[in-house]
Length: 371
Image: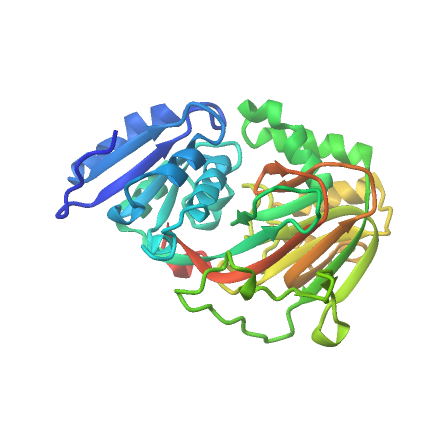
């Protein structure tokens, strides 16, 4: 039940996922976070989720506008963030009530805490600091739109990453081991390296021109509208990728295909070290038409911890590539396999996505420390 919100006190919406990670979310909220809010004389309303998509359903269907809240606190992992964002973007009052200006802050209790890591909220203590004294930061967001006629899926909005192939299988394939925390990714990495499965695809990308500055859309322009898209269609409604407008294509067998909106995908995975949170750019990291040895792949994985896997002097640079992009379209040329957005599996099929600069507000540690 929602409380009568005070206009004179900070008031928060708190969404707790007790099933995240090692299932300590509710205890951490009750025993560690709650007391600090009360000491700060704050008002809060809480939702303890009981099933998958509970947070999405709750946020989407709230009769009272979220604009009454000072911030939204998400206690859990990246899954609860994903649900909140999908619910937020389904609301009719998203722009009319300036809901994208309401900061969200994550208290990391999941097995994957990428948003928390990338905003400097690396543990419960730093998250509490962010709640009470953190700085507001605008994050880029990636809009995924299904372009295949057979898909009735709604658009997806992402703060973190897209993966297909090795990293997607690693993420979803270890879902049953979430209780292990980050250790599950070590187990999954070894398993996937041994398998060395590839996916065949044609990937259209719109690279960022050197020193290009991406514009921030006006605050009243709805990115859910197709009018904001960089994608063009012909008279028959088919997508057109004009080389004269910068589009390029990469085709082949992809062993690794990861597209990042953030630097860290997990505590031990600095996948895209040069990414900024607010520049309107994605980083496409990939291995295509190459068959590196298992030893070389293990070297890549070991270098992910400090981000040196993409260094031009690294021995992995001969087969591991990256490019900054604004948009992409993936045409699968292989049988159905796992595709993942922000750690959540999505329906297999063509993927159309583009980046929008500085859209969602989060509370972070001092901005100078994280970007």
